[in-house]
Amino acid sequence: MEINQLKSAIEAILFAAGRPVTQKELILSLEISEEDIENIIASMQEEYKQQARGIEIIRINQSYQLGTKKELQDVILPVVDKRNKPNLSNAALETLAIIAYNPKISRAEIEAIRGVSADACVYKLLEYGLIEEAGKIDLPGKPMSYRTTDDFLRMFGYASLEELPELPKYKMDENQQIVIDELVEQEKDEEESTENKEGKPEAPMPEREAIKEES
Image 1 (cartoon, rainbow, N blue to C red):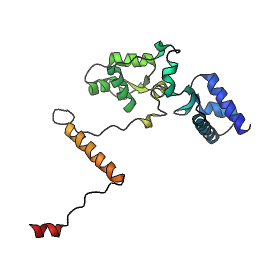
Image 2: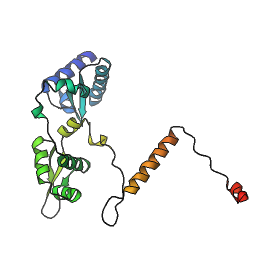
Image 3: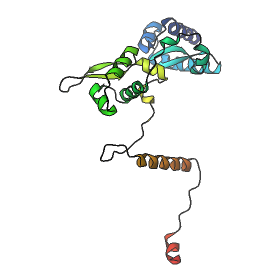
């Protein structure tokens, strides 16, 4: 097939499937290589942007899905049933974030981080399909571990967990509390470093000999 025919075929497959379609499925259906699939879809994504289309091709790990653009959410919501959208509490969001940054984490480990029971949050996240069981951990009692799903990536607009924002580094005091001063100092250092990289001249340092003469 020609390139335009392949683009039409990919669009038709993604539209008809209504779910994430894996690269393997596209390869088997279209009989082209993985590299060709990636290049063609990248070209389609750029075309959708240039043409101001209301849809886009979303990548989720090694799968692709046809979806609506995020900026059109206000137009879509009055038509789409809002009951399908998960309503997550702050506690559930905290639990979800912990699992996202710590794949294959047990419930006990989640509770150790949050300091409270995680049962209700874990059940709710499982119900919404945002997390799933990731197998038992080789520890006493063989506790179950959890990880996020592709639905989590799709809901928050990530192609993979590698796109999650980097967590700030911090220190703990003797009471196992975060040392806020360390975070503030780190942010200050990062801001100064950014300013220097943007081309702002650093303050000139006085020469040591001149300092001695003045003293």
